[in-house]
Length: 302
Image 1 (cartoon, one colour):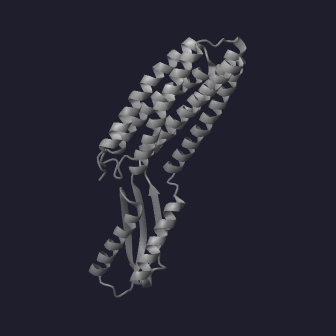
Image 2 (cartoon, rainbow, N blue to C red; image 1 turned 60 degrees about the vertical axis):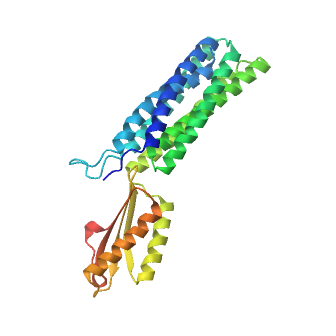
Image 3 (cartoon, rainbow, N blue to C red; image 1 turned 120 degrees about the horizontal axis):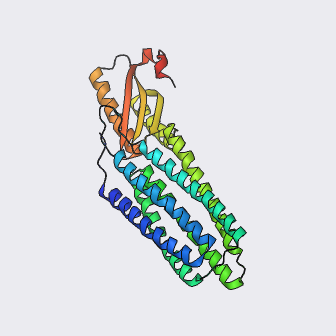
């Protein structure tokens, strides 16, 4: 039942992994030649980023694996596991940055080769900015939690690199080396915020948290369609499983409605509801007569 992994999703994820590995080596080199806490923080974040992207690449392919005998609803909930893992990796990098910055402040490391460090950091930030925006664009178009989380992670790296550039520039022009650890800690704070947000969103997805904006659209569509047909509905439920949006509701027909006619109307209405969301939607309606509208079984209630 799951659609295959589209070419644009596969290409942008493979590109993300390749770029992550190349930039990691560039940042490690920059950190080694400068001794900068801020650049070290950028490199530390890139280590966790490579691990997270590798996990995300595997999760993206698993999410598009068809349903089978043991996974009747597919495998796309792994997307929330992936985004939570990315959040955890970002948070771990932030804590590592704080530790290393404190250690270097105590040791009193000197900063050297600022020009080379700034050039490498600026180049990495530019590449990540383009890549991050591409990941978010494809992720939103394909409703992919994996790509969106990866895009957020890449853009978090841009923020880190921007802080590094600011720190190195201030050290260069003022000669006060404490700008370096100050910006490293600020970068760590930004990473922690991003990491915890991704983990919170991941937990919400795993717990089938409803999107209130989507629910508003669904109710507007159902209200209009049911009113036009003289019907009513109740027990609207919906959830997003990482790639697929699942929607179900009860449709109430007049007692004398024929089964064939009711089925045709329900099928048409399901199509209108699906069109409200877009691609990768599964809509299920339960038909019942008006005289039985209030006789709901306990397993049908929220």
